[in-house]
Length: 77
Picture 1 (cartoon, rainbow, N blue to C red):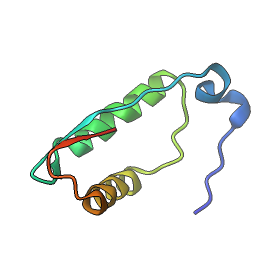
Picture 2 (picture 1 turned 90 degrees about the horizontal axis):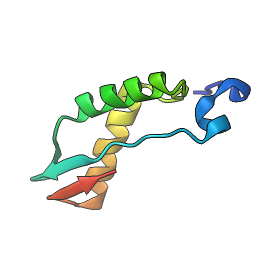
Picture 3 (picture 1 turned 45 degrees about the vertical axis):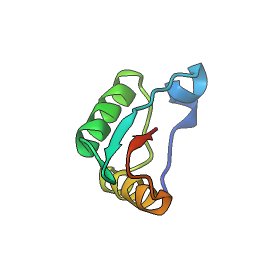
């Protein structure tokens, strides 16, 4: 999948805007993963940052990374 972003009007790139989420992991599961991504989308929209990823792609990748890491209790960023 190829994603096109208008780099000239992307506030995140042009002004250094950004954000992150900290996700709690307990017993190998991320708490409220979908809600974290929804909040991240709202933050990006507020800052006028174009996200090049779809929801399912990010959630799937986060779950895959958690499984590969073997982390049972901790945080993901």
